[in-house]
Image (cartoon, rainbow, N blue to C red; front, side, top):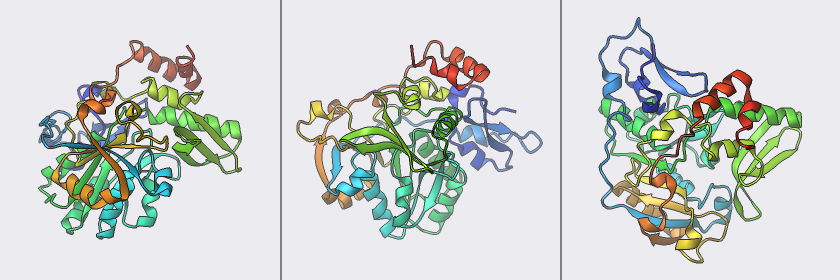
Length: 364
């Protein structure tokens, strides 16, 4: 039995699955590839904890009164070159790791699927760097983070705002001391379908007649920060960007294949759930003159005292310019993306006729 009354009210954060005292909830993929909770009736006791714990139903919209906003770019060009934008996350995570802490974030697995993992070594941090424009599976990382906190370890958990909210809801229900929990949410455009992403990768593997070994959505080449580069076992590489003909980038940025809840997202504002919020500083060339060098600039929102604590420890590693909300407003800090009028028809056609039928929409 489905737990959610409307898919527009479920972000797939998995908090309900983790808090269920009877293990009666399992996250399962729907026909579009998105995860939703399903109830195993024979185990369900109708306690209602799942709905009481759902962060999307009880989201706190308390504003961040003391929020500070910065444009940041790492002075270390190698670190910035391997990062999506200005290289802030790497230094944020490094501080935690150097204090014997633990980092959780999204990484590709051996099947090029995106899932959250736990790392405790700086040499593994590269796995979490870079944007993955696909919804990650939380797996058991909420539970592992709880266990780390109970062992008095510092924990940095990064993810989409709904995932951070899901973690906090789970830890609150379990009454875990969160004094050593640090969180980093991203400015999220929305999460596209993992099923469509698999079709996209399969098409490329067929084209190059080789298996994919590496995916980089933010390959920095020719001083341009939004290239996609995919490497294959045979030594060949596919390179494109969202202004060219990359199919998945266009499906994503044209809001065609996003999760239903993204069109009614409750996190698209300056009222953030993470201690720090990171994203690209779009439009910086208009608002902070001569700061952008086309190698990536991070927009960093410092939302809490914990965020300020880490910021003060890493700021010497960056070129920094403090700014204001009106200088960094972007769509996903104002309101959710718009749902296409023919959204349902597009999905119906895709599920009936396949990936190539879906691509007809971006060729119009």
